[in-house]
Length: 367
Image (cartoon, rainbow, N blue to C red; front, side, top):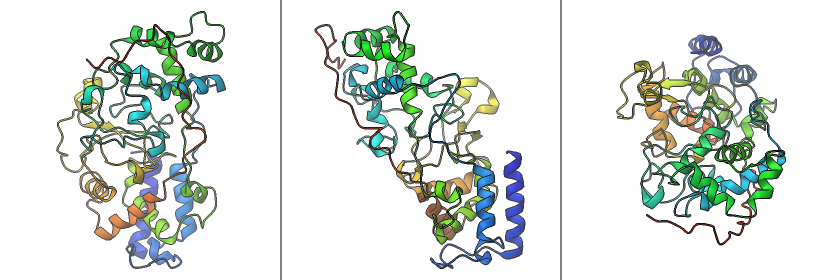
């Protein structure tokens, strides 16, 4: 647990002990008083939130991965390119639908995504929005950044199922319109169409997939951006110890945590242990961001929680230091979390026209 979270929790618990927190239904939508917030005034709650979570940046930059408009343009084209899949029926956008907050909205198992020939993945698809700012990619953190992550699903036999990196390069090179885009994105490179550069371009596009919401306005000083019930929910969220895991501007994505710290969570997934082979990492997963959480169900790595309320109830029972929340507090936290739904960048995510292929462009392969 980070030091600032320990300090925050101590202050909130001490104040709650003095003032007593009312539940989400007691105060309705009337103006907040200190009695609604465990003895703390609303501005103190906002200041504590700013100290704990920080401010969300618009672009998720990396010194290691310099961006350019040309890389972003190429990355956008590749994100929607179905010919990067073996049967040419799947793109990055198929499982990370940008119009649906970056998750999979197709029919299927209801918990995990469908891949090549309808194969069902083993883990729930996380949102691509605000992902680049996170500590690593995938639930087990096996990819260091979005550029590395973007290459994986293309050659995963369960997902897009291209046989290897060479096959990816061959397809891209067979589409004449890609060469000038790659040359613009990677100037001075003799042969710019490589599998690594596909990942770099996709990552550049994804680094600007950032959403802002009313919580950001509230954190920037607009105390009326959140309703009284939402501020009360924020207090319950912090007072319950949720920021011990869901911290930082993304309210998550910065830490690894064992799922089931209070009691054993029923799952056969080894989590990060599969990457590190360290016993301490068994059942450890990257803490997901709570940005747009109301729009990105089902929840958890296994998609086992169908609704946001289910997820909050389960988290409080298995994970939080204070233990299982009352139903009033569950509803209050959900009210706050729904305020984390941001506005989608409709112009930025607009799908470009498909580039024409050539006589050498492979045909779909359903095998």
